[in-house]
Length: 255
Ligand SMILES: Nc1ncnc2c1ncn2[C@@H]1O[C@H](COP(=O)(O)OP(=O)(O)OP(=O)(O)O)[C@@H](O)[C@H]1O
Image (cartoon, rainbow, N blue to C red):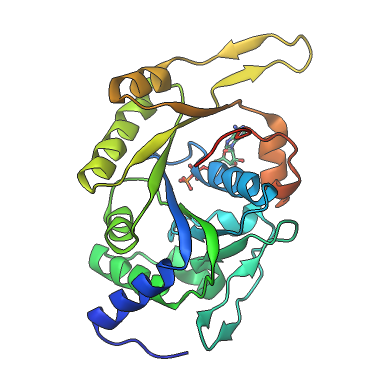
């Protein structure tokens, strides 16, 4: 694998690799723990089921969740002449790359902003995605250096915002929407996660608020999907078999 030295070389290489990917979509939320990684995984599985060639970049360096959701935590990627080869997910052959595959201890390191941006650039330049229909990028929570670097380096085709129905999330997601727009990234819509709970015994539906709907209205965005708080979804994710989860909340959605 060739050593890249200058900023220009790195940027040129990222540009060349990204040109082989038709749609590059980031999944953001601003707030942690709202289900961004779960939504990334479900979206990737939805697209792969349509016969698309899909990759996932886990850009959540300090809290990588994607390898666990796909049961790939112990995998080590191989290097080829083109760079580091993504790991294929077991069922749908989604091409997955996470910092956890390369340096498992990275999550334990406290990285300063400029350093993490540099590592991310280097990482982007070295992953060998090949030709893809979609690359879904799982952003870290917040509106800090990593999302900014991704938006600067990757010509995104859109951003999917993950929100929950709660007021506290809405304020923070709002910041992420503003950031994406400032960086000229199109917000494709909002996925409302944990939007309701259906009692498995009596069928009663409990809703937790309407903040995501109000947010969508305020910014002229559509709610792409509403995902309930669901025991099975957490269970499949925790067991590393998210690809086996049956419900497709993105049915009929084109991104
Ligand atoms: N709709 C849902 N129903 C039940 N559990 C869910 C749902 N969405 C997410 N979870 C669970 O919530 C936890 C957090 O989800 P996830 O890791 O996807 O969040 P995140 O926003 O990516 O978090 P962070 O950004 O802090 O890494 C996980 O254990 C996941 O299984």
